[in-house]
Image (cartoon, rainbow, N blue to C red; front, top):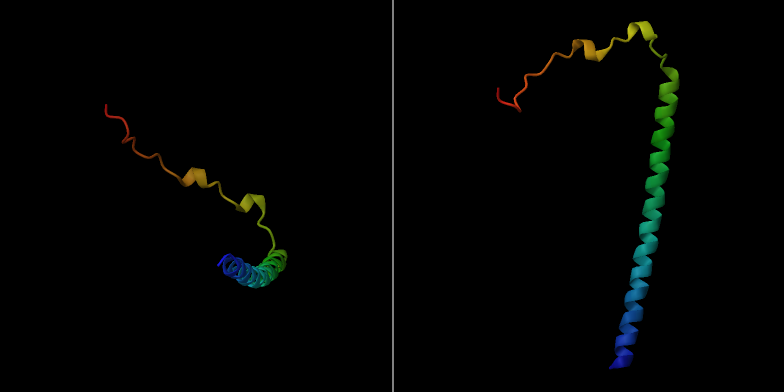
Length: 73
């Protein structure tokens, strides 16, 4: 009985190890894909000319004041 429990536990550990290794492979693949995407984005951004500071408008100028609804007068 105790030998069976030990053997089952070892079998469970082996299954867990196989699943863990498979997860590790998937994680490495995912990291590789993310690195590729990051590189594509970086190269894309290098091809875009930055805007001149004078052509960028301050967004706060266009934002109006919101009505104060938290306090009653």
